[in-house]
Each structure stands twice: as C-alpha cells, then as structure tokens.
Amino acid sequence: MSCIVAIGAQWGDEGKAKMIDYFSKDTDIIVRYQGGANAGHTVVVDGVKHVFHLIPSGILHEGKVCVIGNGVVVDPEVLLEEIELLESKGMNLTGRLYISDAAHLILPLHKAFDEVMEEFRSNKIGTTKRGIGPAYSDKCLRIGLRVGDIFDNALLKEKLDFDIKLKNLYLEKVFARDPFPFEKIYAIIDRFRDKIRKMVINTPHYLHTALDAGKRILLEGAQGFALDIDHGTYPFVTSSNPTIGGALLGTGLNTFNIEKIFGITKAYITRVGEGPFPTEEKGEIGEMLRTRGGEFGATTGRPRRCGWFDLPLIRQARRINGITDMALTKLDVLSGLKTIKIAVAYRLDGKEIDYFPSAQLHRVEPLYENLPGWQEDIAECTEFNSLPKQAQNYVRYIERESGIKLSLISNGADRKNTFLVS
Image 1 (tube, rainbow, N blue to C red):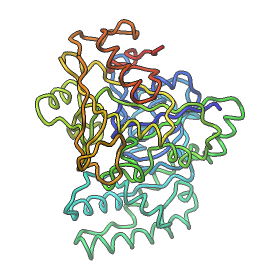
Image 2 (cartoon, rainbow, N blue to C red; image 1 turned 180 degrees about the horizontal axis):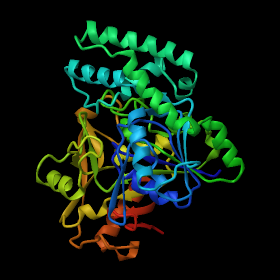
Image 3 (tube, rainbow, N blue to C red; image 1 turned 60 degrees about the vertical axis):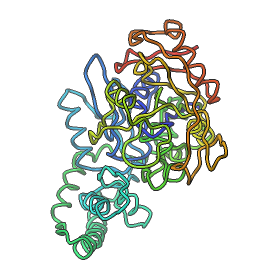
Image 4 (tube, rainbow, N blue to C red; image 1 turned 90 degrees about the vertical axis):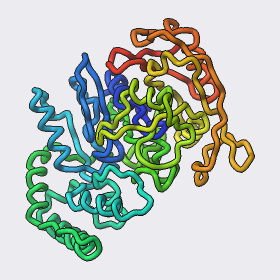
C-alpha cells in the first residue's frame, strides 16, 4: 500500500493543487485521474503563481514523474500549451510526463457542442464550455477518440470522419452552426501526436510495475465530491467521478493499493456556477470571503459563490470516499470575523436531517452552530499551537464533528504556508 489519494471534499476549488504540491515532495509519481481542462489548479511557489489545467502540479518538483490517467479527457491544444510553457521555462519533461493511451480526446467540435447545448438549455448548468461533457458522452457512446488511436492513421481517419460527420449533422441541422472541416481537426491531432509520441504509455501497467518496485504514488482528482456525476447535486455537476471510484477507474489501480485518502476542504465553502448551495452567504460576509480568499476561477475567472462550512456535506464525503485524513485550507481568510457559523444539520419539510440529500438539497434550511472568531492575522503561523485559541477550537470542532482526522492546515497561498497537525 504505497498510494495516497487527494480528493476535493466540497464543490471543488478547495486548494487541491497546493496540497498536491505539498504531498508531491514525498511522492515518486503523481497521477491525474479524471476531468479535463475545466480544472484550474493553482500553486504559488516563492511568490510565483503557476496554473495547471491538465498536467499534475507535482511537475514543479524536480525529478517527479507525472501521469495523465485514462479517466482524463485531454484537450490536445491545452496540453500542448502547458507542455510548451513548461519547456520555455527550461523544464525538461522527457521521462517525467506520461499520458495514458486510453485517455479520450476533446476536439474543437466537442467544445462547440458544449456551447450550443448550454445556450439551448432553459435551466443553465454553468458549464465551462470546455467540451468535457460531450467528450465523456462520446466515451459512453463508444465513438470517442483515444490517445492510442491517433498513432494508427487509418483508424484515426475512420473514427475522426465518423465523429465529425455526426457532430456536424447536429451543429448544422439542429443548432444552425457552421460545420467543422476534417482538415482543421486532423491538423491539430497531427501536431499533437508528433509532440507526445514518446509520452504515451499503458498507464495501469506502468503504475502497478512502479508499486511493485516500491515507488510511492499520489492520485489527484479535479473538481470535488459534491460535483460527482453520481453522488453530487445532479444535474449541476461535472461529467465524471471525482470520488474514490473515479480514482481507481481512472488509473487502473485497485482498493488494496490505497494507503490514505485525503479530503481537501476549505475552512469555509465555495461553489462556481449554478446549483443548490445551502450555506451560501449572499451579503457582506459572502463578499468579504470572496475578496479575501481570491475566489475567482482559475479556468474561467468567474466569481465563486461563498458560504459557511457544511458538516452534512463533509460527512457524506467521508462516507462515500472513505476519507481517512483532512487537509484544511484558507483558514487565514476567516481572520477578523467575530462569529463563525458552521452548518451542523439541515431542516427538510419541518424535520431535522443530518445527511446530504440526493434530490432535495435546494429545499433544505441549514441549522447552524455559532463559534467565536479570532482577530489575529494567522498567515505567518507555522504550527498548530501558534494559532489563536479560537482558531484552534474551530479546527478541532470540525475534526470532532466530521469524524475525520485533521492532518494538515494551509493558512496562506504560498507553498511554505502549510503545516502538520499533531
């Protein structure tokens, strides 16, 4: 058991990239297991901000190997941009970045289809329009184009021709949009395969061989538990499984390989786009959290909705994912509040419930516990005992009531602002 998993335990944007960067120093291989370029993972190292959409943020650690797993949908143009940006900074990716031959590709026609579908809906989902849903749809329809397919030119042309004809039929006849020419999309793939030819591998074989050799592996997800297509606030969810099942399916590893499962949570909670959000604060407090926390999407720039910590949500995340440890981020953002609220349960149809409902979340009323806040700036605290007593009490309350061991705290944007909790 030499593998740990980092899972967003809320609605995404929990600070996973920073925590993954922290875990990476003690890891040999970092694997992204689902999602696509709709994710924006931000890491600040020595005051310099790095934003990743597909490549695991562990690539910033010299000598670490990063893998894009089979559960990821890969946008060739975005991945090429990330590779070329890293190379322009003097980083040699040879032997350090691998891509699963079973990962599916996102093409321009997927992004066009994503856009027109969102425009067509009367009840908007808030998609990033990055083609994620249509690419996963093609995967389930068994017409998707996988990375391994592009090295067989006859197969590539056959599959690409079919998908382009099918999508163009919808775009032209249903949505009155211009069709995509075959040559334009083929040219993107042709450039892509030339660049990644030596990076493509059978990732399950690679990862199991690495475990047998005693290597340590970190699995990183995108988005968060409450955006899981099966267990989240459907239909206001992502198109994949950020939960533990997605971690295994998206890599080819199994339950016996897993040592620890870290749930990454903010000290408050945020959400991007549409969908129910019981603890949302729409007034002055919500604006303060957004401003102080820099709550704007790394991928879209959209302002995030902000609210109080939600215990029913985190308990459900613990049950479904088997979370063993919690990493709490952005604790410093709460400094200066006289009172901090935590949702401890919900009321639904006059009855108190302590779970996260699958279908009625938009109708619940959160029930709060009020805890005293702290006024001190804690951004420079580097150990638990240096935190103000009220901050310590807040952290311990979350730990006790969630039933999850709190192992790490992040109280600032930089890599150095992270410490263990004993």
